[in-house]
Image (cartoon, rainbow, N blue to C red; front, side, top):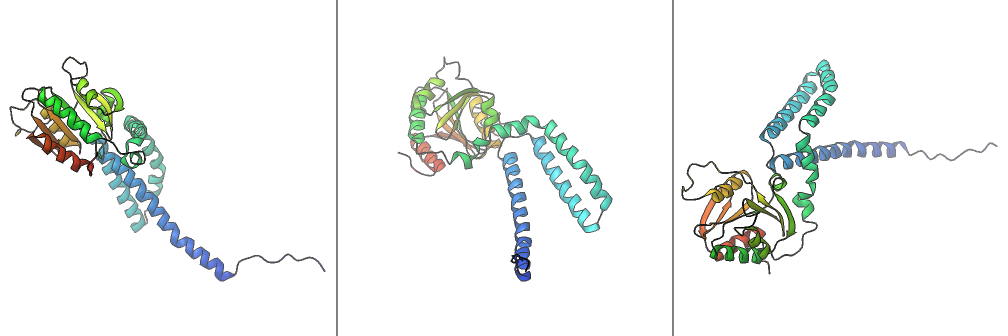
Length: 272
């Protein structure tokens, strides 16, 4: 008798069950992928001081794609679907060519995203070091401007400043803002427990209601707080007064104790 190999085919009901499971999971995986992609794009656009044109174009393209897809599916517009299919690669290529500086900046600073930075964060002494520096700068009436980065990346500012990339230290901050230091003009950007850059230019506030007695440092602090979620510290060169700009508002004339309270709130815990 000829040898007959045993049949290994799955029963019909098993095959149907596996296929049904795939049909259920496949749309969920696709939705998850697209949702993640849109989330990353939106976080980049709204989490940085990105170009207003780029944000507007992103919203416009997103709305156009959604409407085109909706009309094609509802009205079965086969010719329109063919045109969209032919033009899509060219549109993507054009966006990449026109906005390649912004895209390159996003890739270079991908590590700035808080989700990734949090993996490498450790306990620091940021608050006491900041307090020591601000206290001495205030007593000596040395002007200072310090921006603490939060969710919104300040990479555009640091790219135009002088790179420091050193652990935050009160003596280093004081030396940067020493009047005869070449770095004392402009602001310092702090990311986590490091001084990223100095001599950075912050956008000036155009708010007409700001106190006329306040100078350029305070306008720069408020301007940055209006455009981003940065927490900005200011020391007045004339009076030594300490101010905080956050959430588009400027709190002037704070004591060191009040500053400590605000910094502890910012970092979410009291650091030793």
